[in-house]
Amino acid sequence: MMVRSAIKYWVERHKHVV
Image 1: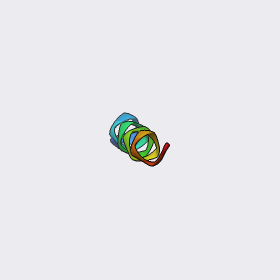
Image 2 (image 1 turned 90 degrees about the horizontal axis):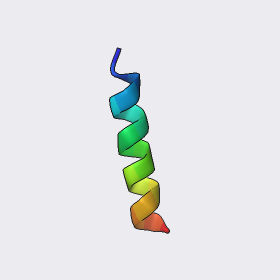
Image 3 (image 1 turned 120 degrees about the vertical axis):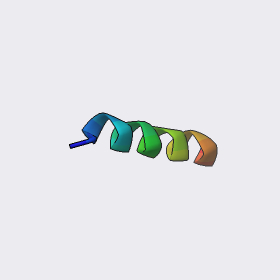
Image 4 (image 1 turned 30 degrees about the horizontal axis):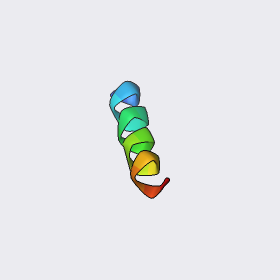
């Protein structure tokens, strides 16, 4: 499972939103 990749993607998306 690529949990780390999913988290990184989520964090990046949030970073763009902020």
